[in-house]
Picture (cartoon, each protein chain N blue to C red):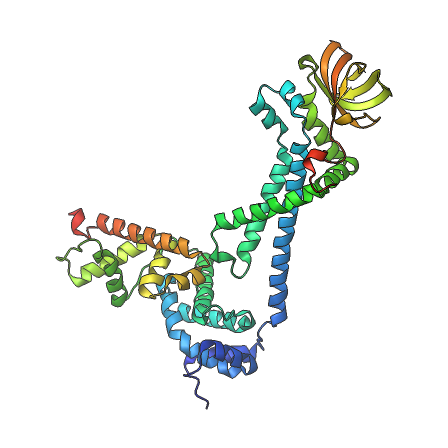
Length: 197
Length: 242
């Protein structure tokens, strides 16, 4: 079997258009990242993540001829995933009340946002801190939550976030600042910083 | 091979899913751009008609009819065309945002650029006489538009202030005009001492503007005769025309 690990995404897209079996390599390259992204923004169980992901990859396959090589394949795939997850949430009418679950790793990354400007209450145990941060996340508006996820958990650059959410770079910068401000404000209200004590 | 990748490949094979052909995407993008350019062209057309409607105004008559220059200007604005222009340019902005790279630009930049392109094109259309042709055709062929046009100019029927507009019914050269104003009142107008602006010669069936003095409820003495809604733009506004 041919080794595709050295090939770029764009090269695999071209090869997939000639041989559908090659698409497997794109799926394998992205299924981990995209399933984690779906779980982070949609907060759904493993089976639903898999269902959404399957739809995402089918959509990617159908639209391969619309892939613009000026855009990174990753941003394009994330954009399709974002749209599918949003459509799912709209269908389920779950955008407002989300039962929040997040990894320890996620919580630690989000605490970094707070630590850059304010002191986090050191007396809180790790478990309490995680619970508090999860509460803060769940209280953010969906747009702000997703932009923080893309920036701090998915570690995307501004240009990539702009391509994924189809918004101008200037708007992305503004949204990130507002999301951070809202995150800190809610954190303070929930006794997560010294400044509120 | 993971379970998910196997499921996906099985589904693709079972449902005989194929990538959508490239030409369909290209056609869609071309259609989107064509719709955007069409919206810009309509915007330019609206601008050229607005220039025609504002540029063709006899400000001396407006000054007499209105309560000051600001009030006069408010009366002169062609709101119908301004609304059409707004809708068309809003659509243009939305269409541009749907193009492949459209999202990279701020909404305000897209809207302002669309307005600027339409404005420049609209000026070119105006000087080429497009605004006049469109306006004249609409007035002649579309009844409701002609009604709107007359009702818009009713504010210039203020004989007590010495200003009157209407259509010429009959002419006695250098002596008298019979007109029907836009409020449907017939007038006999003495033009024996009137000065004709831009050497304008009134014609039966065409609009005319008059400044002067009301003599009675159906008699008016004109000091000036103005061209009103001339079929072509005035020479001073037409630098392209030799």
